Structures are given as C-alpha cells and as structure tokens.
Image (cartoon, rainbow, N blue to C red; front, top):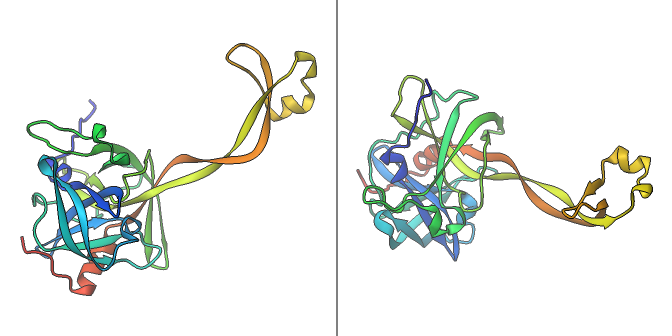
Length: 259
C-alpha cells in the first residue's frame, strides 16, 4: 500500500511570500526557546539593512509591512533570521530539528515561484498557501562547519527561503524543519544553430558527435555551435541545515516575540 502524505497546516500556514526591495521569495516562521522568528535565505535580504521593513503576504492574502531586525549567518551559509516585533503566523508546533532525517528519504518544501498568484492555493480552509514541491535527500557535505544539503527535485526562482520539511520514521504527521532552500545548481548549455544539409553531406564526424537531427518538417540538419551559452537547471536543489539559524539566534541573544 502506498502511504499518502499531505502537508499539515503548521507547515502550509507558516510558509509565506516575502518581498524585499522589489524582489519576491519565500520565508517561514519557527519558534526557538518559545520565541517567534522569520527565516529566509540570506541572499533574499542582501540589499536590506540590519533594521528593515519587508513586505509579507500573510494568511487570507493579507499584505502587510513588517519591521524586522536581520541577522545573517556567515558565508557560505545562505540563511538569514528576521526578528519581528509581533507574531506573524500560526504557531502550531514545527520543530527546527533535522534529527531523524535519513539519506534517500522524501522531503517537501513550500514556496512562491516567481511571485505568481496563479501558483498559490486559495480555499476557505487554506488561503494564500504556497506551491508544494517534493524531493529526495541525496547528499550532504560539512565543510568548515557549514552543513550543505543537496536534494534531487525541482526548484525555481521564488523558492529561495522555503522550509525543507520531513517526517521522521514512525511519526506520520509530525513534520520537522531540516533546512532552508538556497537555490538550485545550474549548468551551461551551448546554443546551437540548425543548418540544413543533404544526406550525402553527413560525415563520419557528424555521426560520431551525434550532431545531425531531423527538423519538424523532416529536413536534415547539422547542429552547429554559435559560441553562446544558456543557463539551465540541473534539478539538484541546494539547502542549508536549519541548525545554523537556531545557533545564530542563540549566539546573538535575539528576542523575538514570546509565544
């Protein structure tokens, strides 16, 4: 039997769209030591000052300005902690703890791709809920104390700052936050021209390099590099361990609103 897993309200309603200086991304709330904080990717707030006003799309599609103090993890860790003056979302338990996550298991993240309003869920029960994605925890590296996580999935612009959540084995409804989405690994592909040729013009080199194709009209053509490249998406998702956010909050003695 296939187990059906659905994200719970403590994940869906804590994940919100954030706007900083005209950009759009994702943030989410957690509690640390019974105080409320907003987490996002550090590059999302790169142009913001330490004390800033950010725009939040809250439950019910309400848009609000929020005054926050921004704490930033050291490079290369792409996590920022935003300390708000008031509680922003629901506060049902959502532990910030990757303990129990197993390599190869499914994880989920919720975000707001491209800031597009067509990619949110609006129902009487779930208003302004982000786009849900699924991935597999594929790899992890710890270099100079930075815990970097890699996932096999699909990520797009706007998911930066999304919570990476998972279910610990034997706890079918108790989601935990393992990390924060940073981005995706990109690659570069050559831009090719389709140059029509005749069958008699196909060379052994063409065959060896597999550079001859049929066009939509059935014509034969050789793929010729233009010297230009285009950036692509490898499907490898990059994130950082939520531990870094928790450690930063405690190290700075940050005091978010009490829950």
